[in-house]
Image (cartoon, rainbow, N blue to C red; front, side, top):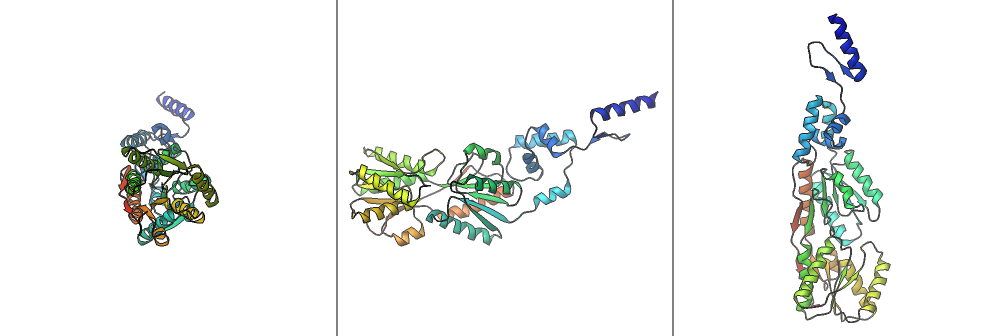
Length: 353
């Protein structure tokens, strides 16, 4: 009768849970998989994998949920697979809008140099208006084809990056999420410095060329600095929007339209050095030299070919060094700060504007 009851109990359990095996005298065991842990912990399989491999920053709450689910299911990670996950490719992906822009070109140069000295190889993606390319690089990170990403642009809605928040990603001058660290400069201070510089030269009708002024973009802080500086002096702000993604011909056309519609302007604070350079070229072609111009970026190239143009200088080499330092911290799975802010300085040019 006892043997019959035991056999009946075994058969009934096998019918309910066919993967369950019984060992007499020991605790019953089940061959649970990674997805079972993820389902019980109510997280993704990627999150479970990152907890197991201690890869990327995760909240204590998430880590505890995963460990509890593993304990409840008596889940044992595959040691060989775990070791494979810990192997690094020593490859870092850089995603920027374009390498042809002097600011991004100089930044990429410094990043590549610093990463090479640390034993990394670099793959570069120019992702301007190409969300598929950006998504491909993110997929490479998820599949461990690269150890980390340094991103200088995003084509996705910011919410898209939330699922990547714990991975080794560092953003430069773009706020992606609160958990992905951003290397930035004090863009607001730069906006104030540029505007105050023009005001101190005696100009009152000052126009600001702006790009994307959404909250996540650096141009929004530069613009706010301009607005506050103008307000502090009782001056009326003027603005003209030129998208960063426009071609040079489209920008030239927009600049000519701006000049025709704003005949009273005396000075222009351009959103970046390339826009400032195009404005100066347009003014020269129309034999107009009575409008002062100041840019923003202060790259070596622009100061070399246009030494007379004033600009707000970003510490580009320092930004690159900080980005690599923070990325390595993320790769180690250690916690990072939401933002790392660096200072800017004023380059007056070799002549008064």
